[in-house]
Length: 211
Image 1 (cartoon, helix red, strand yellow):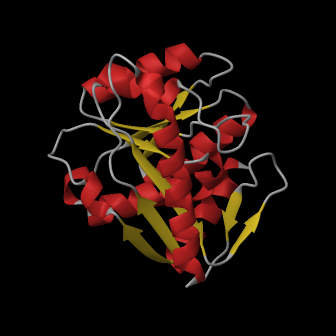
Image 2: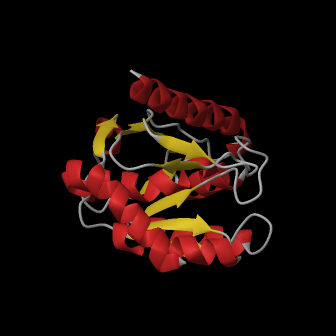
């Protein structure tokens, strides 16, 4: 199953015309860490979005992103399928091992790496960010880059998040919003701004592919 999902993702990558909006927000110095966030529904496009950033942003080229993914079977499948796109997985979730996963991501950031979080996963509710992402940003002293992704040809699953499955021969757009600063002494106050930016990035991607 993991092999088939990986083959599907490679087919999408090869047959899709990709566009990146907001690349200037991810242009950091070599070795400077990043926190990227996507809604869980964008997972099938997120790994390819990271590869797109690597191709268009020289300072992140060659880096491997570390994504927080749940420990259950679906999480293991995603981990294996995403590996060819320079994405490694931290197996944890908000419901089991979340604190350990955040500590591991913090070590990744302290080493100049890239952390990717879907703050409404793995069980939702959809588009409601859990506080882990702002806690991580506050501890690391880093802003959050909210991202969205959409394809002009995609199917929506009947799952809780209406996950987006792109189809071949389409236009796909990845959007990066401006950095969101998270105060160290009150990280929860930044959660509404992170939620709004994730919604805005996803809606901008939808509008771009509709045009």
